[in-house]
Amino acid sequence: MKKTIDQEEITYSIHHYDEAIPIHKLVQFSGMNTSLFYRKFKHYTGFTLLQYITNKKNN
Image (cartoon, rainbow, N blue to C red; front, side, top):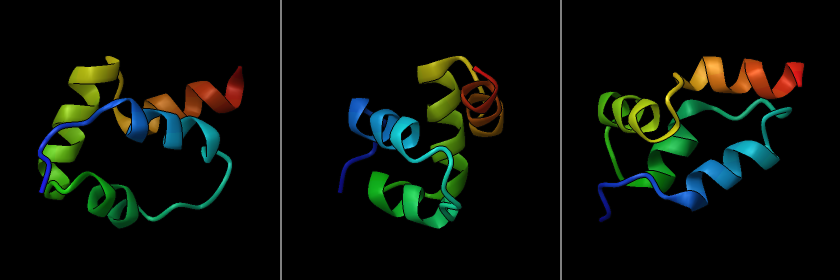
């Protein structure tokens, strides 16, 4: 089970930002618990998941 966020999760988020993706699917995909996923996502991207999706939808 991996414990890092990599480009695969970010790419998935980018390509599916306009879909209703339950957070548990992204978390399950990453192999982390929800809290760790959120922290790693923010560390990797500089944004919370919600900020990231909002920015993508507005650009």
